[in-house]
Image 1: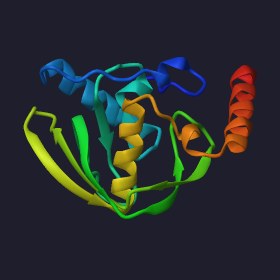
Image 2: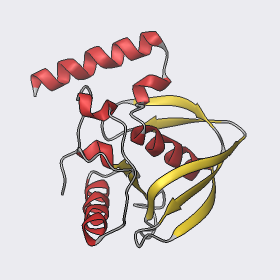
Image 3: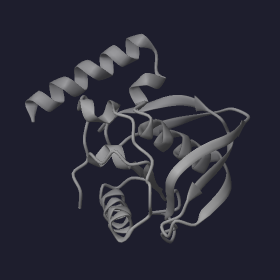
Image 4: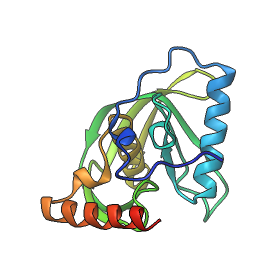
Length: 166
């Protein structure tokens, strides 16, 4: 299991770099990220959240309620957004924080799978929300950036206080 960075760790603000080649080392990282996500437990994890600045995300919106259905996104890019939905989001890098965030209800994403094969996926609802959330991480954009200034200040103060308290 990998260590998940938590806010206000500045490494969460760094933009991830594209994966040049999908190698055994990248596949191993994907496996470690998936194990970390499932163990947390969470439904998504971006490489930035474990201190690796590579454009990789793992998502599974079916687990733990159903069978594991891991989605691996390497070098993902959203090519289309439609509609709007507001969803209460959480984040492994923001323990105990849940906030309503408005995002596109339907997205089209192009990416590479764990073997480096390109694919396109059209996602709706929770999966679309999770994809947008994880791609934000890859760009250094955080959950706290999606809320009002006042909420951002309150969350920041609370998480800094919690981190100092251990």
